[in-house]
Image 1 (cartoon, one colour):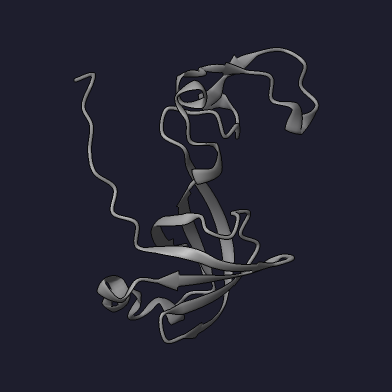
Image 2: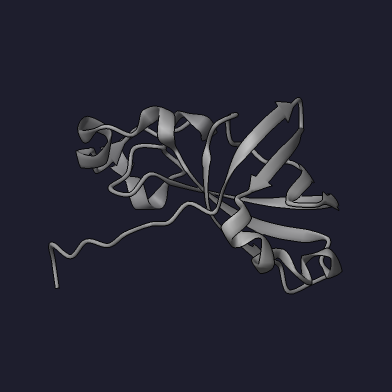
Length: 125
């Protein structure tokens, strides 16, 4: 089943980043999806690595993961490299507040303007 493709509907955007704190704006058509999210303290946030999305990065399958001091090439799936076939980032964040369709979170490592792919609650509170 190689060569399949799909469509990703971005549900929001990282509106603001201030140090370790970020505001995620959920688009109005997805607002109903955040109902009940306030019951959770920690969330998985999947976002698009939009600033590095290009053909070269999408076709790079071996990297030197310098983040952890490595010096030998490894496959991208064994690293946190932004070079990947699908440039999707994943971070576990602390949910601090929900105000309308804006989520204030702590610990998101995305840039302002990063499209949000999905949000899932962590099972443990």
